[in-house]
Image 1 (cartoon, helix red, strand yellow):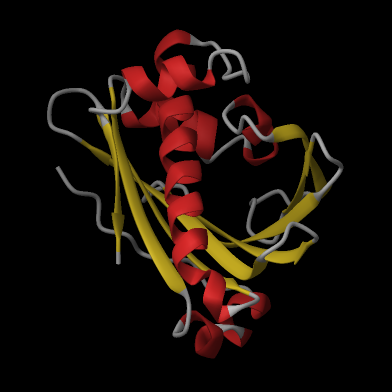
Image 2 (spheres, one colour):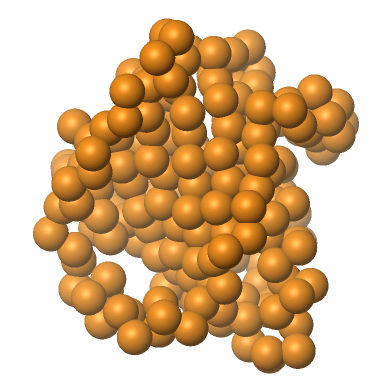
Length: 193
C-alpha cells in the first residue's frame, strides 16, 4: 500500500530555495524494514533530535529550536571532528509519514546546500519501505561525481542503521558499521538520479 504524500505548507526557507533545487544532484535510497510504519516513524519522524542513533558520523545531535508541530524545528549534528550541519524541518506531515529537512548552516566541505526527506510506506507484509530522496549542491562542479558516490554511501549506511535500530533496538557504532551495512546490503539500495 502506498501512502500519498500531502505536504504541509512549506516554511519560508523552503519556498526561497526552489530555484536552487533545480541545480542539485539527487540521490534516491530505500530500505525495507521488518517493522510497522508507526514503529519506524517513531524513530525518524517523531524524534528528530535523535539521529545520532543511526548516523555513525554524528557525535551528537540536539535541537537548536524545537516547535510543538516539528515544522520549523532546527537540529544541529556535530561530528567527531567538531564539524556541524544545521538543518530545519521545512515540511512535516505525520499522517502521511513524511518529513523533509534542509541544510541551512554547515562547515562540512564540500556541501554548499542540500535537503532530504524521508517517506514511509507500508510494504503490504507488515513491514515498511523507508525512502530517502536527497538533493545537494557542492561548492565546486569538479567535485560532483565524487560527492555523489560519497553521499550514496552515506545514505545507504544511514538507512541500514535505521533498519538495524528499529529491528534490534541497537544503535550503530563505528565498530558495528561495516557489519550492519554488509548484512543489510540486500535490503537497501541507492539510485542516482
